[in-house]
Image 1 (tube, rainbow, N blue to C red):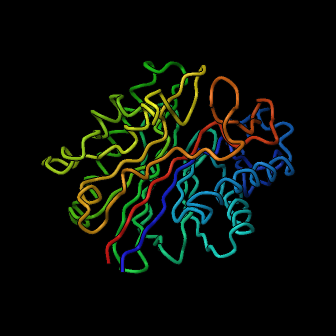
Image 2 (image 1 turned 60 degrees about the vertical axis):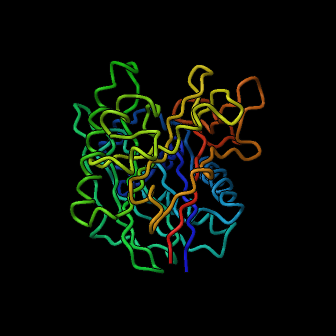
Amino acid sequence: MSVEYYVAWWNLENLFDEQDAPPERRTDKVRRALGHDLVGWTAELRDRKVDQLASVVAQMNGGAGPDLLGVCEVENRFVLELLVAAVHQRLPGRSYGIAHADTDDARGIDVAFLYDSTLLEAPAEETFFHVVMRRNATRELVQVNFRTRRHGRTWAVFGNHWPSRRGGRYESAGYRHIAGETLSYFHQRVLEVHSRRTPVLAMGDFNDEPFDDSLVTHALSTRQRNRVLSAQSPLLWNLSWPLVGGASGRADGTFYWQNEPNMLDQLLVNRALASGEVFSVDERSVEILRFPGMADDGDYPRPVPFGGMGHAINRDGFSDHFPIGVRITEAG
């Protein structure tokens, strides 16, 4: 019997622990790096933000919640556990596990996965953190070789939060080129270790758009499914290309910068998923998720952020990014 998975990705916008988090939840190094940014960030504000985020997660997949959710900009496992608990209050039938470990990012923000443990298993020995080399510490790429419960198949998933555009889009581009090369290298390694039929999904906040060099030249992604199917080298099919134009033909995106939409959050799949032989992806199901209250109702439909970290707080906000989602099916 086939199994359908609803997969989503979301940058949670600085989901930090409270200002006075104990040493076991925040190192002195991270505390120094954050400086005064967390002043006034109380446990009550943290929990309010968690509740706002959980209300969105619970609406995904037609109100059933995602089967697999990749997230970034989370400080530690503790806040992830709070998020899972808040989602469970809304979806008591779900049983979410967490795949996470602290990375070397200078600000202490991590990439992680929430997954339904009745559908997927995340073996500890099959979870990897790939360093992106740059002068200043940045997030590692997180790779989890999930094992499907129903059929016992390996499914490699990469969570990405590539170096930001701070300092200038072009001035910082080289760092994202390195991240793209890192993803491409470990995509190939998965195929060498497990077999060329292993499905690979890469999702994340790439801080670049689908047409940028980091994704096209370095991560080896393309908008053309046929190229992925016929290429000798392992390419990735970028499912987010159609969203750049939007359903109406106007530009769309998951993040707004100076009122311009940017398609920074993306979903990429390899040949094994594009072929539809064992795993298949429904390209028509790819969507930017905007539930009531998440988008500004002014001239620009940008996300409504929660704020904090030195920015004004909106207790009715969520994140400065929209989530994205897709449906993937595993054959029986």
